[in-house]
Structure formats: structure tokens, C-alpha cells
Length: 320
Image (cartoon, rainbow, N blue to C red; front, side, top):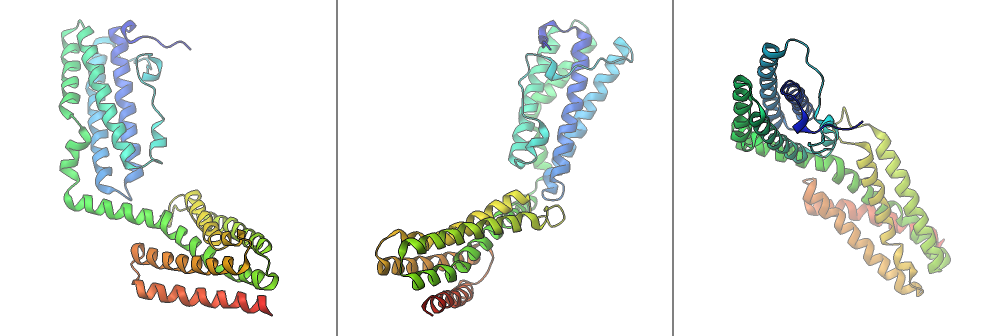
């Protein structure tokens, strides 16, 4: 289908396009508000107000159209006009986050201002020109409607609340599953790795066992985390993100002390692997302290005890 040029539209078609555009923008803002209502209620209120303002514009345009051209309004959308920029579907932006939504809102304002200004210049009817000019000034006066409404709804306390909500989401979706994966990979693979090391005394075979254990644990942990729940009721975010975080960090945790066994010298490889294990356990303790509000000494003690018991188990079994 060939797109039409904006300059080729009649006054009736321009008004019909403006009506459908305002309706589309209102739906976009309502969709943003719906996506943010639980996590960012203050910003959701911003987008709700933006949607209401777009609906007011639509009502004014519809009344003027009906006075001039009757009740039938042809469906003309921005996608039908060659002069408009093609954007990603609005519903995909809700998956990208609040910043992407605000940027889209600012782009909508700018495009609407340009559209109404050009439409007003082309109009020959005084009433149509007046309304389009008023809408252009309204869009221009926004400078950023999101910012203007933000002054009303995004108070300092609300912004702090949103930052805290963003932090909680990061913890739930990335840090927690990643930390669980790192702990699982670092600790659970100790026994098979060091059992293989002390049973065979062969660095390459030990490396193969450690790699298999790490990758196997990563796949298992990723699937377990991803399939545990869909995140809708728990608020833990998309299962794919959690599964990737948990699976990747599990594999990383195990491979950390498997890689030293690429060194042919068994004694050197083992000592390096032990040092890596201590570094991994320290990193886990720090992450728990930094993101999970666990006192560092308490976290270090808990991880050290668990890691040491698994490490000792592997050595005892391998030496039997």
C-alpha cells in the first residue's frame, strides 16, 4: 500500500488524522500508566493525566469536525502518511522500562507540535486554524509534558519511592537469582571437582569434570529459576531474565575453580583453584552484604562454613 503525503491531505482528512492521532496517543499513555501502576504509581499518574489531556484534544477536534463535515470520520492514521516517522510499537516499550516511556512521550509531544503547526498554516477555515493553532501552542507550551506533570505528581518522596522500587526490582530480577546461582555454582561444584582432582591426580580430567559439573549445574539452575514462576504474582520479573542470571552465574561460579586445572602441574593448579575458591566465597559474602543487607562478617562466616564443608567432602571422597 502506497502512503500518502501530508501535503496532499484535504482539511477534512487532516482533522480525521488529528482525531485518530490523539486517540492513539491517549491509548499509548494509558498503556504506560497501566504498566507502571504497581511499581511506579507516581509516574503512572503522570501518564494517566497525559492520556486525559489527549482525550480532551480528541473531543475538541471531534466536535469541530462534526460541525464542519458531519458524523462520519474516515479512519486515517499516522502510519498511512509518508511524512511521519515510524516508531517501535508502544507496547514493546513497557518491556524496556520507564525511561523509554518518557522519551517516547517527549517524541509524541514534539511530533504533535510540528503536525498542528503545519496543519494550521495550511488551513483556510478560521475555526479550524484557530483550534489547530491552539493545540500547537499547547504542545509547544508543554516543552515536556512529562516534566510539567512530574512537578505536580513526582514529588521528592515519590522519586525516592520509585528509586527504591527500581532497586527492589533489580534485586529480585537480577541480583537474587544471580547470587543464588553464584553460590550454587561455587559451592556445589567443589565436591565433584576436588574429588576428581584427588582421585585422579590428572589436571585435564579434573578440568573436564569441573566443566561438565559447572555447565550442567548452570543449565539446571537456569531452568529451575526460569520455570519456578512467571513473576506476575511474585513481582520477581520476567522468568527469562531470572533464568539467564541464575544459570550464567552458576556456570561462572563453577568454572572459576575448574579453569586452573588447564595448568599441567597438578600442585600449582590445585593451589590456584583453592585461592580462586576463597575469592569466590569472598565475592559472595560481599554481594550479600552490599545488596541483601546481610552483615559482612555474618555472610562471610555462613558462606565459609558451607564452602569448607563441601570442599572437605570432595577431598575426603577423592582421597578414599
